[in-house]
Image (tube, rainbow, N blue to C red):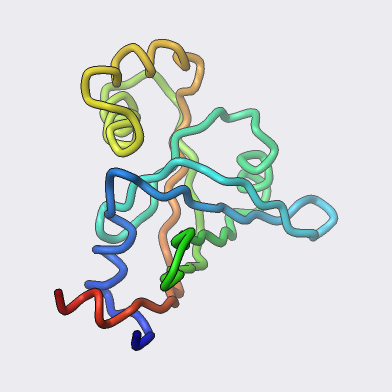
Length: 148
């Protein structure tokens, strides 16, 4: 096993993995300056991270006050590849079609296709998308796995 730093393509491939999709962890700053970490469902569009949530959650309120965010995804087993990023977040809440489509794209990563619409209806009050635009990305992958 040869671990190495990630390239842009590694990041896209790693964060885009599906079935089973990995959870992300978003980090924000509480009012007292301390860290606040939350596991989340996410979607990577090749550049940005999109997270479906509720506007009243503590971490979203933290981002409304201070948009600096950290985000990480890591494998639960060997070789423990991981990607971490720091950037700024934008919060969008509403009932428009763009938000509905993003909710579907995120949910599709974690729920079987035949169950997506029922799952979304169950969480109908969640109409917020947090988008993190990375400013710095780091991580490591097992280069042996990339060559298969």
